[in-house]
Image (cartoon, rainbow, N blue to C red; front, side, top):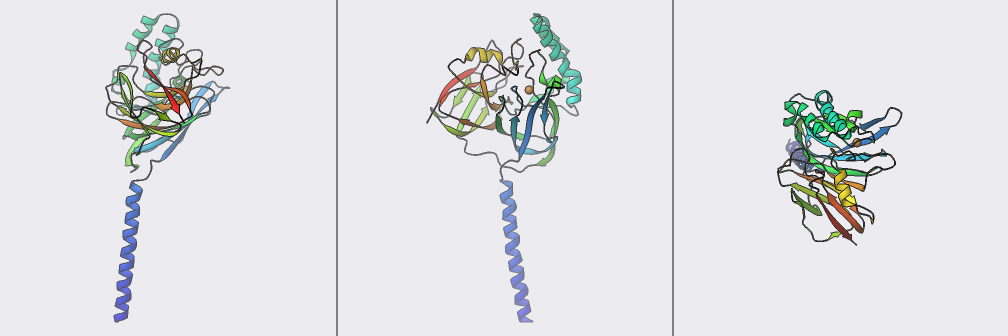
Length: 316
Ligand SMILES: [Cu+2]
């Protein structure tokens, strides 16, 4: 009997140790890296469709990494819009896309004032849409990763780069609904970024004087309320000898006739390595970029009248 008691006691202690261990493992899982969600950008020439290919229609809330693979010959981005209440991409296609396309068509006919006036046709609820970041401008063949905190609710992901005919990609299929549940990824916020950018309406304030070559984790702190319509984001471009930074900045204004026009032979006036789309003040998002020695620039998607960019050199 005594021995049996001892054996039982030993079993109780062992199972106690095991449950402690598994408890620690669960704690460890709470600090795991964010789950990686893949989204591919593709172009179907036969149907002239620009599409996102992904199974990310339902995601948990919390820190999440998007791996954005541009398998198309044009430039694309993923702007993640948080929609109010029950609104979805169906409402966007019915009520938001058309006024923007009408505006663009009028601007392309040389009627800029009438075009901008057409935006008055946007529904009142569009004012409640929050632009919540997403993978930035990515050139053909590039893959980039960005990490952000997702909040529960309806989201519409879109790309509004334009075709050579001035049609927004979201009008040609490049949009999808992403529902974020009340469950959480429990993932930890990325730590130890190698570069930190404090983004304001004045520009990009970096935490280092010199950027070294290699893979960087870049933290972007959104430090100011966004200017209306065209807001601050951070994109990375290569600066070659013939790169005209003013021309690139003007290209980033969708409301210009040549703005955001990406053709198969001429995808953009610079090579885009990715970045983070605009977010409300107080947010921080992260992206990975590999930099080789040479010249680059941080650049923002802003009105052509108020361009925002900053050139920098990468050293060995
Ligand atoms: Cu696109």
